Amino acid sequence: MLLLKNSKLTFGSLCIIVTAILIAGCKVDFEIKDTDPKEEKLLNTRAMKDDFTSGFLSIKPKENNYLTFTSGTKGYKMLFHKDAIAQDFYYEKNDKHFERVVVTFGYKPDNLLIYQDTTYYDNEHLGANVDYLVESMQEDLKGKKIKHFEDDEKEYYTGRLFEYHEEIPYSNFYAVIHSKKYKTKSVTFYGYGSCTDVKKTCNAKDERIEKHFNKILKSFKF
Image (cartoon, one colour):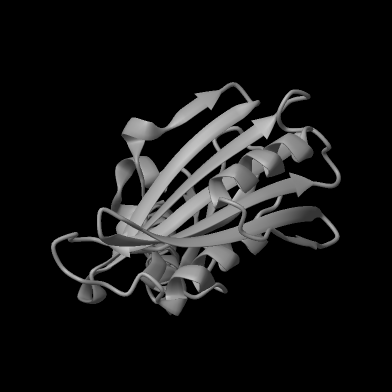
């Protein structure tokens, strides 16, 4: 009987030891798991560190310097610059039919500020009335030419206007994006590049400004 008891104790101890080894092994595997360096880099960006902004964002490592923004209405997605901040004070949303998002970021060494204002409509009054939205944009462009593009999912109208306001240069960018599939969904987009510090000079015609706005525009998915 004594030998039997000792055998049971030995077997029980062995089970505990084996279990501990297996758990330790799992832990080691988890700790040495490789992480995507692009993903890790995006997680540490200015946009992801902002409490309000990060609530809309997900990581898309395939796009260099950009994350993915999902509308609070769930009605659209677009690319979002890693250094941009969505301004909580200006944010508006009405159920699933309307949303306004104001975003800013800068190229600090060059004294450049990027501002973008996106308004989403999903209704018969404005979202479906593309002609009215384009006409309103034409007024803002002061007669400048509007370009029309389209792909399989959307059509968009764009226009640019460079001007000085109180001797400060502004490179303005306007657009209307309309869904082909969802006829009541449209977005009006306004952005500009200007000087972060208006007391200093900047190149408001910097090619990065138009390149950024075009990237955002083409990325819209309804």
